[in-house]
Amino acid sequence: MSPLSPRFFTTSFLPVRERLVLKGGRWRKTDLRVRVGYFHHETTGHSLIDTGYFNAGTLQGLKKSAFLEIYRALLSPSTLANDRLSIGLARFGVTTKQIQTILITHFHADHIGRLHDFPDAKIMCSRKAWTIYRSNSRIKNALSGVFDVLVPDDIDKRLAFFEDHPVANAPGALGNGYDLLEDGSLLAIDLPGHAAGHVGFCFPRLPVPLFYATDSQWLIKAILENRAPGFPASLVGADREALRSSMRKVEAFVKDGGEVMLCHDPNGHPYDLDAELEARS
Image 1 (cartoon, helix red, strand yellow):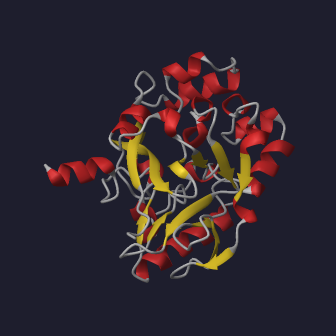
Image 2 (cartoon, rainbow, N blue to C red):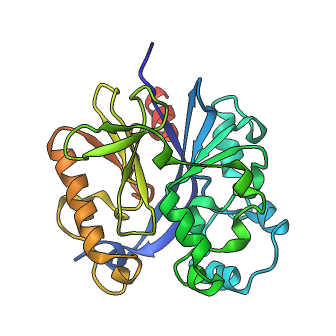
């Protein structure tokens, strides 16, 4: 049996000034990707890692939210009018209706924006992320980039937690993780700092272990070259010291021979589906 291998595709782009996401970077704009991952396993079926941003079709079915409108005005992701998620899935011969499981790295809007488009899917996340979301007020959640209108009303009936799975050793300096498929092929790794309950996913059985380190930074070079941005980017984070610790964990994993991928890094990666298609052309 071949090792579980995810593929990622870009669903949105966010134009930002490089200096805002990279210490000493230039003032020119760079397009940050918003990635969504896909894999298939007999335990979870057709599965997504996050859902990316909401698009125009999703927004039409949501309750009105002043908080979300402000967020949209500030960030303006580039693909609101397109269904890049369905386009990406079609490359695997899969439709949105066939998705059975969604693994949530954290509850920021660019990661759960399309949960409403998967009404039958099982949803897996960190218990800590869910507990804090439920205990916070609507305003406090919104100020941290989490919007209740993006969370399905029936999510309680479909929710499962990473922490309910066995603990297993992860490669390199990652420590322990939750063995989500209970065969050692996919581990959820705590990566605190960016958001409550923020996790990454490790695929240990690939020829070179892969760590999808999600939002531990926006750019890989910010971690590997010790160029994490300061103010105002430093304001986007739940715990700055914990974030620094998570960054060191990611850096150590790479130095130990592992391969790292981030959600927003603008450079193509071998596990990006578009990069794979370019290589075949």
